[in-house]
Amino acid sequence: MKQLIKAKSDEYFDEVVAIRRQLHQHPELSFCEKDTAELVKRVLASKNIDYQENVAGTGVVATIKGNCQLSTVNYQLALRADMDALPIQEQSDLPFRSVNEGVMHACGHDAHTAMLLGVAMILNDLRDQFSGTVKLIFQPGEEKLPGGASLMIKEGVLDGVDLIIAQHVYPDLPCGEVGFHVGPYMASSDEVNITVKGRGGHAAKPAERDNCLLAAAKIVSELSKLYPEKDKSNGLLTFGSFVADGTYNVVPSYVTLKGTMRTFDEDKRKLLKDNILKVSNKVAAEFGCKAEVFIEQGYPSLKNDEKLTGKCAAFAKEYLGDSKVKNLPQLMTSEDFAWYSQKVPACFYRLGTANPSKGIDSKQHTATFNIDEESMKIGMELMSYLTLNLL
Image (cartoon, rainbow, N blue to C red; front, side):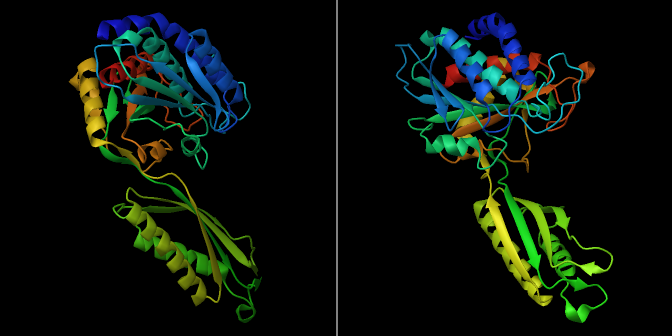
């Protein structure tokens, strides 16, 4: 099986690299991936792979049915890649750098899409090696709420699916290594919006005004005591915006706060929301002000199924060798793949892409992010190997 996969990977690697570079050069923002989807459909059609288009807008879902008659397994396994880019102006000297002003594939979704097309090519040629069905999900809008995953689920993308896996490029690991984490892996994320309102007025006339600024400052202070950043056991609450649009001698009539809250546990997530509301209202009232709290629900926590992830990590060691497979810590970052993981057994693993010797060491969501494209060959092969073993 390894020899078959490697031979097919060698056959298609140059084509997959070319696809990735074309996608990188023409990135599209969340839910605007029209040209990306057209490219995906052209490649699938050229390989005679059936697909459904316009799922959740620009999403594409392909299916490959196995022909193996020796197995009694009849699972439906889903493989997912996200397609959207970020609103970042690329700063690189790559010959295939983005030509779309202010838009860049700074998170590696170009590689995810290209690799999944490579996996589709490999599995399509190896249909006699497995039974059951592979569903290939090319998903829009991972970077933007409510997340393309949630919309695709609503449109039935998980109907009949027994298992789902995805891989994500990871500059914290060198090219050649992969990483797994069993259990809750990535945090839920919600956007916190607080507006403190009161009477504005002259700074020198406190009897004629309230002080929304002091109230807002105390809200941040009190919440930071409840949820100190050094102790994330009960969740993480961080404010990144504090806007008080007054001046030297003018106290504003309202102050706005924006922040993010993250947890790995739904009960702690609810408690954190309740505490934000309770503290905001109590403190605002102390200053004669009113607090308006709006928490926009984001992605849930991403949970890697213990049994499935254990199997995938074991298969990865078979394919790459024990030393190339790492155990990863939990991350406070979030991912809309979490929506899938809440519905069916899931495994979301990391593909090392860094290579400092080539000058490839920038982190994701930066203007200089890039990957060692040799990692894509490993990604194609490993996902194909996992699929064939699971089916």
